[in-house]
Image (cartoon, rainbow, N blue to C red):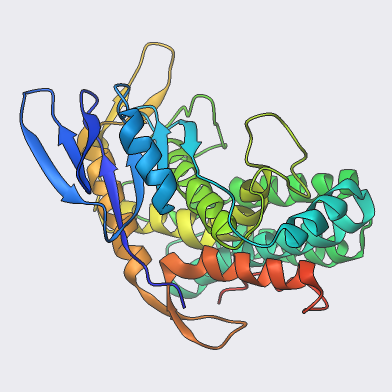
Length: 343
């Protein structure tokens, strides 16, 4: 089993990363320097426009360390990966499946079934834990709609139909998302999902979390020998890691959404940790990103029992396990891809 190593987050906008011997050197804007050994680092997320030296980029690629560049507000820019590892035959099978709309739909349907199942679980858990403080009828109605939609997902053989079902399910889910927010209702009011840019504090947290999750999924897929740019539901587009977007669908609600709701309800984050801009965009500020990423890392270290393998693993290893299961399915070792169904 893969060991969950450390992730280095660079949040200061004026920071430049370089290489010295076998260490990553963090050069701060104020002239200070700090060194950390690359041994033991699994991923580096850089939220600085200054970037990193070519020597460090090359060393990270050589060692298989994920190096991801994002804007200070968390929007994905690029991800560096080295030479492809894994069986070339596996990737050839992946490409063949991707070229077939019917076969792609079989895999994509499993991803979307997992997404809808987990979204429904989030709503049902809210009813169970906070029945006296939420609109139970609205949550139950949305849950029932998701249940009926999930049955249709597994029966469809059309990607266009599947996308339509996924869109309807997402609309129903986010329509009652605000019900899961119990505390700080005035500061964290949610009405509709907005992306580019996020127009409220909840959307700012969701978008930030999804960016990190997508990069984690991309790294996991590459480590399993798969091509993260060739997807099944998300079709090929230059520069887009389509398979990573596919894989993260089933993990969005249980990983990001639950973390966002928990941070708000426990007051781990407040309205002071956000900035609002003239165009209406709302973003996490530097303090907010630190709080979010600290909670993110804490969640990744939590142990769970994987619903399919029945083994204890850390949350942070879930994308890697799902990538390996996907690879096994494509090789023909499994009859179907088993999505991550959490409860």
